Image (cartoon, rainbow over the protein chains, first blue to last red):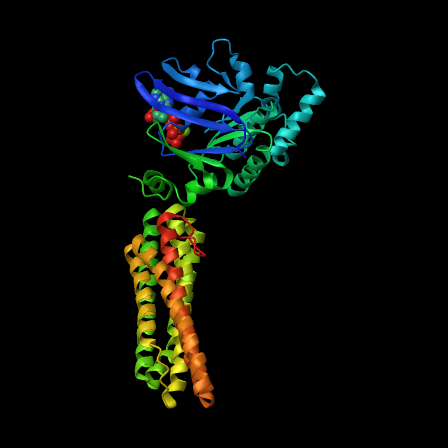
Length: 253
Length: 219
Ligand SMILES: Nc1ncnc2c1ncn2[C@@H]1O[C@H](COP(=O)(O)OP(=O)(O)OP(=O)(O)O)[C@@H](O)[C@H]1O
Ligand SMILES: [Mg+2]
């Protein structure tokens, strides 16, 4: 049975000034599925991910062509409220980027932006999110210390908690585990399994085993082009294209 | 790390091919022993089977080590799983060669009965299948692998022919039943070798295509 389409990408081109970073990408993402984006460094994975919540808008020279539909509605339509969009499409970045505020405030921030004022509710959500992100035990006694005092791996999990707090429908994760130890990585992978029951998740990862473990669908990008997309099981046992096979088996270039 | 890994794969490939060559040689020897009723040659095969067993264990351990250390995917994963299975088939083929050798040692001591069944022909077909399946592995030749899968039917047919002849012969030589059962078992062992040859060919197809064609799904 096919799951409902959550995001539809049609003929997406993306430019940084004159440089075209994405070439005619068309791809669907389904509800309750985890999709992994893989490909060599610089192939455009982060760029692609950032298109999905209009993070690239912040880059003045950038330009987008094509259609990106979220539940059938074009997210680049002028009428779209970008803040609203980003609360529906949460993101965890490649490098942890906590705000220079307390741990508590980092996670509570999005809730406040979304207009939630009930202190009890905020505290409850903060705790739940930190637990989900597998960092609660490490921070529960220092909630009002600066988030910048956390280790890199802890900061990353804090950012995951921050993204989860606003209960997005879609979670974009750009190499969320690159700074984590094996135990925290395992917890995040477990979390992804949990979350996919209610979210649509898109994850960028350089770790082939991780892509194979956590995702249902794998998309392979090369030089801004979508080369092959398919069921993860198929991609990692018998991909259709030699190029995909060469990449995932480390025979590239 | 990648270089290391490819070197390990190369090593495994060489070892499975040399095990294949060794096993093929055993089968050739036992067929010759059968044709010439040579009990001493048969004994040699029985006594040296441990060499094959040891090599099989080494190859399997090597494969498991690579799986644990490198967690290979796609063609590399298919290659290693195919090697693990082919390794097992080769060891079983060598066991069948030993089984035949045991029968040969028994019948060589007894007076010959002619049951008008061509063991050389059946043995030749079996040996040919085994050789082709190993060639398909060496050259990753998918057409040849499919051909091997087809040849198995001929050997199966000869096995049931042998059964009919021997049943008939038991009526003619009621005092030589033990001898005739040994002959029947030899045809059965040959047929098993052909089955393992088919398995190897199927693994080669899986390795190349990624499609599992076991249990006769290759039509
Ligand atoms: N702000 C920017 N301005 C100009 N070019 C950029 C900018 N960001 C990325 N690029 C270029 O766009 C291409 C795609 O970059 P992107 O960051 O999307 O790659 P990636 O697949 O995420 O790589 P990595 O795996 O290293 O994170 C690269 O050639 C990069 O140099
Ligand atoms: Mg990136």
